[in-house]
Length: 500
Image (cartoon, rainbow, N blue to C red):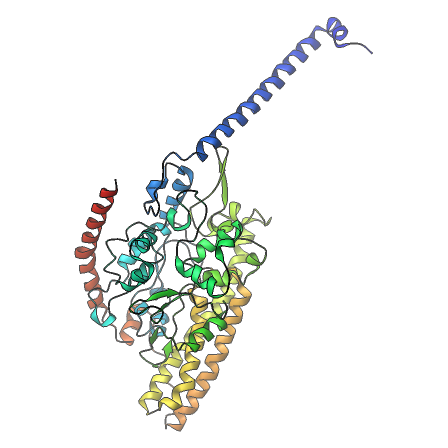
């Protein structure tokens, strides 16, 4: 066998080819080594804190120097351009889209104002603008409790630490207005010293403790959902736990299903309000997102909230969580197609098919509930007694609780479509049985005519139907925004300037 030297002596071109090939290989190996060293150096640089972050630091900007990529992606929550078939991150007046909601919530502040929420960046601003809590000047509504602030800002853990949890829940919303100014952000979910995920709100810890569970023993993957569960849950204000406080409480003692929470509320005889028309003791579902998610196939397969709503991204050799918390439909390649190999159009259609089917039943249930409230009102007018109405009012309460549980959950018809469909179907059964009882009662009271469905084709017509004076509320809100909010912001700016 001839040696390389013999071959190159007889064929000089071969020598040049080997030389060039060697140079290329050495160059590529050097480039690879340089990239590895550079990325390792970048990793070391990034993981060394550049700035100490104080305990309970509520300002997101204070975290920027240590976590620039996460910080930059977080401000993507200010983008309101995405719109899907049934949602998105733009503000939408849901009372205008579904005017029957006004009648379903008659007597409750939601009948005045209910908007589809924007991103976390707007958490504080949007609560300033809603007519539900712009009520320091609305005596008949009563002063809204400071508990309404609990999930809106990283200032909340700071204030809770300063004055105590029970004391925080004891104040009014307006009293703490100047303190709560920073929108949902870093300190809500991360420890300032280690950046590890942590629970900053006591209600979640207390809910698990009552079930005999220690949330501090949760795995990292579980924490990627539990930090969301601090706020994206069903809750109520417990006025009996601490005297003078409206204590934030999750009704999970009997379980997390719609029936288990209904049983919990029934056992303690709790109601959020009494319906203006039917006089039923009502329950208002908040946003049972975590509970619904846990009943779906993704949670059963070990997927976390963050896996889909905050997927990992790589940039400059760094892998980090995208903090632009948003619908996976706006980021399908990073969210859905990590696991699912179908085309984007197919995945979107799969989601819409599930949503359409659940919403169809939900809308039908809403219309039947409107009829039930009006029929109950007629029964009272014709002299029905509380004894005669007792089971009917409970039927309305339970049926609307099921409707609201589905309506209030963000993405519930996708997270757990089978469970959502089941809940709607049981709600339809309950309200059908209740309306049958109402028809029999009305007949016995001497009324057998059909009660016409009201003209509630717009929000304004629906609000007029239940007797709301919206001009007055809007005028009060205008004064609040022009006179009170600027004072709050001025006090907040003075306080934060003193920190610096």
